[in-house]
Length: 79
Image 1 (cartoon, rainbow, N blue to C red):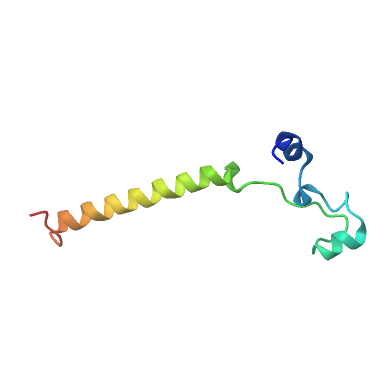
Image 2: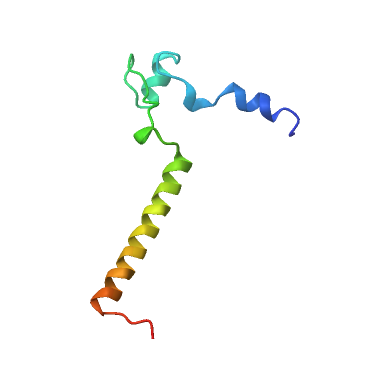
C-alpha cells in the first residue's frame, strides 16, 4: 500500500488539470469557462503553512499589545 507513495504524489491530482487539458464537458461541470486558466497564484506569494504562521504571530502581537495597553491605562493590575 505504501510502496510507491512518491510516485503517486508526482502524478498530480484532479485539481492540477487546467480547463484546456480537460474535455469541454468536464471543464463546464467543474464550473470553469472553456478556454480560461485556473488560478494557481498564491496570496502574497505565501504557502498555506506560511500564512498560518504569519496569522499566529499577528494574533500574538495583538494580544501582547492589548495587554500592555490595559496595564498602562490601569484597567488591569498584576497584583
